[in-house]
Image (cartoon, rainbow, N blue to C red; front, side):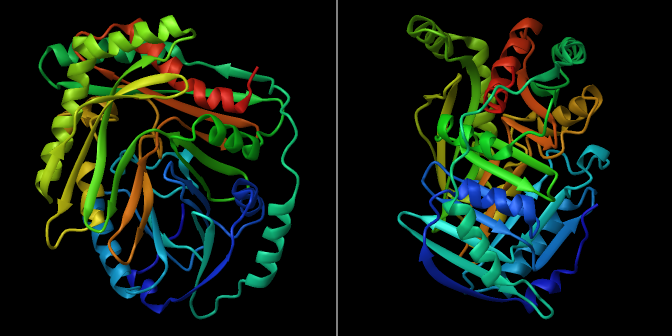
Length: 437
């Protein structure tokens, strides 16, 4: 279990920032840190063109699994921001989908709720890059040696063409099928309006999975998604290429979107047009979407002024299409980016509605802890800005093995085969990036 420290650890930090030439191959830089440390190593790549690579920790807070995790994270984030006021540092956080559940052995290297200030961080925006370092008494990291090693990694050759990765895949379909059937009956009895059920598949490859190739493939094929990777050690890495942003706050303006309702993109133009029409006209998909947009709208009204819902649109990805409703607002005085995260997580797009009832069903039907799958992660700065993602389209990589995750929104009219097909489509981004044969 990751260690935890007192909030006061953040008050002893000293930070500095310098501008340097931007990395040409940020994934290669992250991969060096993932292999050699310091840990945790973190990668964040947004569709807006911002890339962050962070490593090490000078102050780390791990909140154990309990019902008061929201208050604990809010207090820690506030204390850390106050301690680092006017600092160029950013704070990084991650939250399990369900931090109140008992900690699962499969996730032992990850904390249910964590907040940390990296030892070294590279922020790439536009054509420039800023290096931010943070240290406290007794910090012994050799920055010059680390930077020299990273320059070598950045200048190295790109990986050669990938050979297909021979692997055994355990689809674990029967438990999900049974869970869908039982959940439909639960919803028809009026015990919930929508429940998002998740399933996982186990991939066992003939050799260690090369995460650099995986990340490069995701970056190319899913550049309109947030690419997030978190490595607590040299052996494990949780990777997500998610189309779902939890929320972004810039200068007090909150931007998010309701993302729910899915069809495949299609193998041909005709199929794509047919699936697009289905997305535009299917009552089940629209009701699933409206439940999400209504909850997000209601949640933001408690912490924001001038909340606006834009017209729904269709977001097209490489393999799926989603209904999406952009939503924005302005933070009320006295509220923060952390308040937005706590108000929205977990959203109905990955949990269901009403949230307490949906969580009850998920805890009863799902046999394994989701951990960071469908959890939230992101960064915040001392000026009140921040960005966060919902960690879907993701997988936990451990050597030659991977656990991949996908989910589907279950309503009273759901059909088992349709929901199974949807999860198979959602698993394809990670399977394709793995080059599994």
